[in-house]
Image (cartoon, rainbow, N blue to C red; front, side):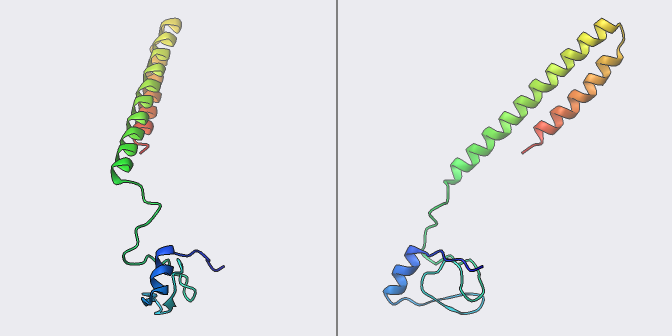
Length: 115
């Protein structure tokens, strides 16, 4: 299946007489986003990608996701430990507490290492 995407910048520069060639197969390009000969994705020199996000926004978004996951992991782990304490008190046995502690540990680790 051939891609039919075009680079506006590549087309404009090609119409002005600038020559572009595929770096893989040396096919003469006229603004195609993918080489019609070998299907290599083409990024033209001087072209600014339109779908790039600001690096600062990407970093901030990643930090927010990581904090969110860690906070929810800690919240889930705390809730399970409290449940374990309640089970231990009701059953007059410490097995519920130990089991909930192990489960809480693994939940926290999974959520904290999600990103």
